Image (cartoon, rainbow, N blue to C red; front, side):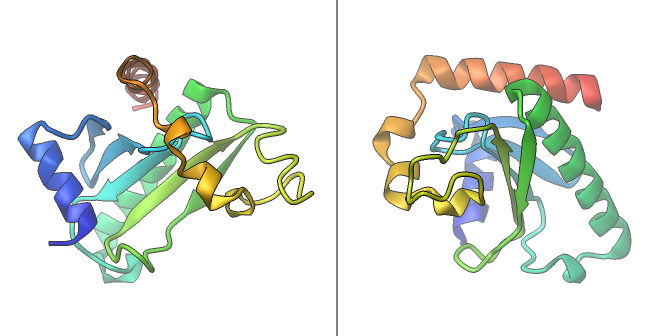
Length: 152
């Protein structure tokens, strides 16, 4: 079973603490690490590796729902700009990375200033300091869920 399928199984079992909401084509979850406050993933319900392998209607609905999730993330966490990534080189299961961006979120790291999230050092992005406390996680989930309910 792939890592994303394992996370989805934990959602179904009620043991994934990062789970926010189930939509028609996927699951909304907060990222384990939160340097970019509100970093969210949208996990496709189907175990597919490419967008083009989804049937047309599912693909269109998945893309629409991803956009809705991104809007909710932006509103919930005050994003000035959203970054969207659908990579799948590591975990070959369709899943979007949605990063709310604000001015200064990667400044002073390699003199890059404004740029993609991957310019921020990985060891800092994934450091234990960026794992939200249980209280912080619950607050973030509530905030995102409220915005999702508004935009849906």
